[in-house]
Length: 481
Image (cartoon, rainbow, N blue to C red; front, side, top):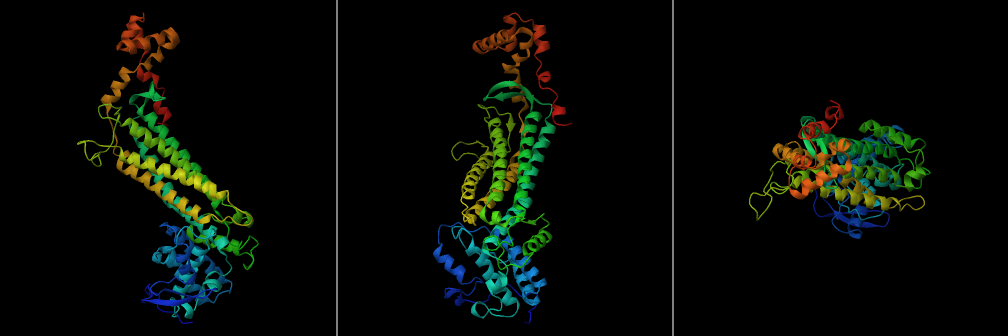
């Protein structure tokens, strides 16, 4: 088969419709598109909502089909020119050059058969074009016999799911969480010695430093990030080679190992073949674990965002210890109002991720016999969570954390007026008398020092014992400085 020039442009150059056939019969498809009969049928039979299968899944599918074509070509199961054309077309899928060819909805067969065939048909027609052949009934490449050789939806779809998720988390979510934690850490270091009042139960508590408070956020983000990273090992095992039910029927010996090795080579990911293909096809446990890891990051991020918006409340009638960047007007009716919008957006993202994780967990419980048929909803939710979580971490960092400053006067005033500094007196005068001092200061509206002196504590003793800076421990040690 003669091959056209390598720079053959993408596009059919056609209008109207053409005939495509599948096992049921002929279907008219738009001539300008590469997809075939099964994709066209799916557009009719699964016209449910506006939720499209995520493009990163198809990009990953392109890598899976490329790996399969190369392996089949090396083993002589495909003619070299045929294998090369399929690999070229698959490269275009992986690069996003054919994104307009993947129109299917999330709500389809629970195995993802429609999406697998969408990929097979697009690659078959594009590869035929690369080889100088026609599209549809006259194509030189068959979607099942060539592009899907040695494969089934039941093993390629979970393989593409795992690959897409690994790439999304590795290249998107984790770097943004790392960058946010680094920005939080930088603020913690800068403000390590700034004494502020602590709060528990939303009530005043003993002092700490701003740096210590921010170091807690940093540590929480990094711990959640580490748990998410650890969960990725559960999806580095690939189902490819299991074909229909896990037995590997119609796949040559060693095909699963070869696919995993080739994909590892193409992506740099530590991919291996799943040791038990029956578990790989019948469960979604790995995806459930990664979703839980994303949820954990969302929980940590929500803590940071909520604390920041509480601490920035005001400016006159709230805490206002933090000065957030003034990115945009906050009200259409109240002039001069500025709101913690980045924090609000982050909280909404976190709530969405937590909700999507609940869906993933429920879907993971729906495996029956040799296949879990809830795969499309799982990959749609996991990829969405990974994307918005990374974007929210980036947006919060760029538009809020990095530009946040302190209202040092307000912080100092809160420390000076705090009743919980009386805790430093407790070991010397007893808990009950210290409580009397705090209550008297509160009820009479006087300072803690005045109340203490009224109840017999010498001014010199009070000044010596009640030193906020001495009550915060060793903040530089806490931050490893």
